[in-house]
Structure formats: C-alpha cells, structure tokens
Amino acid sequence: MSSSRESGLQVPPEVRRGAHNDREEWFESAVAALDLLRRTVDRPDLEGIEVLDVGCGTKLSKALLDNREPIGRYVGVDVSPTVIAWLSANVEDERFEYHHLDARNDLYNPSGTPLDQLEQLPVGGRRFDLISLFSVFTHLDPADYVVMLRLLRHHVNGDGRLLFSLFVKDPQRPSPYDLAFKAMVASSDPAVAEKANDALARVMARPNRRFVDEVPGKPLLRARYDEDYALELIEGTGWEVMSLNPPERHIQHYMICRPV
Image 1: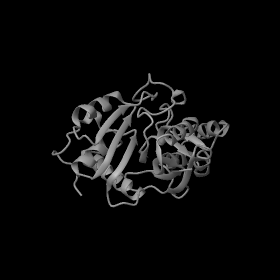
Image 2: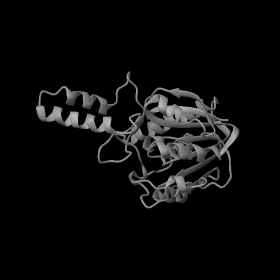
Image 3: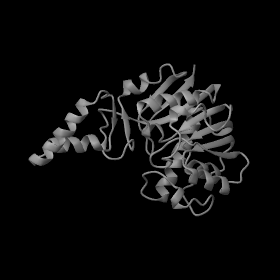
Image 4: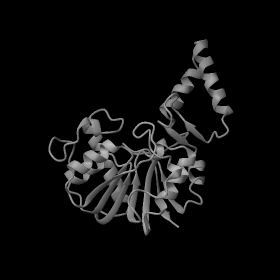
C-alpha cells in the first residue's frame, strides 16, 4: 500500500481537512478509511461498487486514485464549495463526480440551508451500494443525526450498506476531555476545582445528558453520544444496525447499517 507522496493527485493544504500532524498522517488516514470501505462490503476491492461519500473532503479521492483502486463509481458530496470546486477542476477520472451540499455548517458553509429543510441529497434519485460518512455525525446534534439518516435512506440500494463514524462515550476509553475534566475536579487549586464543578452543574442541568457538545465555544466541534442513545436514534429512520464498532487508528467509533 502506498503512502502520502508528491506523485499522484496533488492536494494543496487549503483543501485538506482533519486533525492530522502532517501530510503523511493525513494520507494514512485516507488509506485506513479505504480499507474500512472494503471491509464494510466484505470485498477485497471496490470493483463494481457504487459509493456515495457524504462529507467527502479530498483524501478518499486521493487514496482511490493514487492506489488505483478498482471502483464502480465514486460520488463525493460536501458542504464546502471550495472543496467541491477544487475536486471538480482537478479530478478527470470519469468514474468520479462531485456535488455541493448546500447544508448549513458553522465552519464550512455557515449560510447554507438547515438540514431539516432538505428533501434529498444533491444526487437526484440515485441509489448506491455503499454510503460512507467519515467525521460527519461527529458534528451533528441529535435532531440532525436523525434527519441525516432519513435523507441517506433515499439513496441506498436494497442490499446496500451505510458506514459512518461517530463519537461514543466509552468508559473503557475516556476521551481527552473526560480525562482533563477529572484532573480539574481533583485539582488542589480551589479555582480550578470550582470551574470544574460549575461545568458539571451545567451538564447536569441540560435536559438531554445522553448527548454532549464537548468543546465550549465551538458548537458541534465534537458531538459525543451515549451508546444506547446513538442506537436509539436510528429507530424509525429506515435503517437496521448491523454493528457498532470500537475506534481504530485514524477512525472513531463507527457504525454499519443496512436498509429495512
């Protein structure tokens, strides 16, 4: 498997996304995502598979093209008009196409349409064998979590699969924010402990404590769900959960579903 390099699709820094230390790590995360796509359809490659990648960014396109991955079709959708414009201008392979999703996103598309006002994704009535969303549900509140699932249901083949990553509260794998909070509570500095107790009081006062918007001042930068709540929200959206899987290198918890 190839690594990030100067050959292949040249992706400039301004259209690369993700919390990666360098270009090499960014590309490694793309290769890991590509491997997960193969595993989701239980195939050695994606030959003949039509993929809809929502929140596509640029890294999967680079991994697919640089590694010459067999694929039926790859359709990328993203809320960033800059990303879609760059991909449309620089990817010439006829198996690849890209569409702007004009949905509101505080970071990439703040003037977009609220998700609950959309009737379908910008691919018409087309259906796909595999739908993937990497680091999309990680930024959705519960209402949009449900809306997105219902939108996606319109675009899957009868025997297709849905793969998406998300942040799940896991007592065995506390988040960096959980660990920092525990350290604050245990601090010998009264001011630090008081700040932690104030934060805890705000959490306890929320009507829904099964979902946490973890980063103060940066709405939905990191949306984390109780496991049972993440599963409960899928009920009635037209999907059946096949598995909820623990994090892997470069990938948060991820869920695989099939249509019902």
